[in-house]
Image (tube, rainbow, N blue to C red; front, side):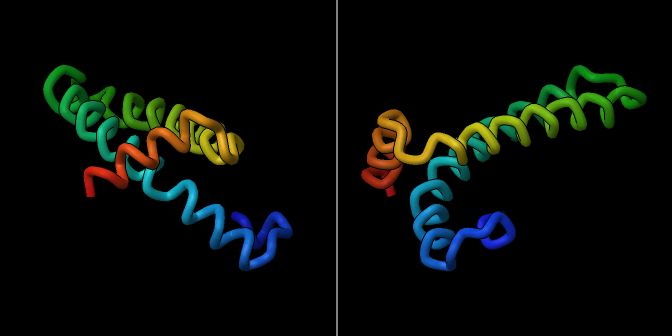
Length: 85
């Protein structure tokens, strides 16, 4: 979305470097839980609705996450994740 919103390639590269790892780790922790609940407790006829609801929440979260730029909590999360890699 960066290039489509008028950002330069350098700005997009900086944003990806800043946001990718924290977002990926957060998503990687959330979706397995969502899907485990989905397959274990949600009736088959409502599973698509359940997942679509969480996709909507996920899109809102990722949008909010991207708008945070260099928030202190994001820097802490990235330093914690980088230390564990």
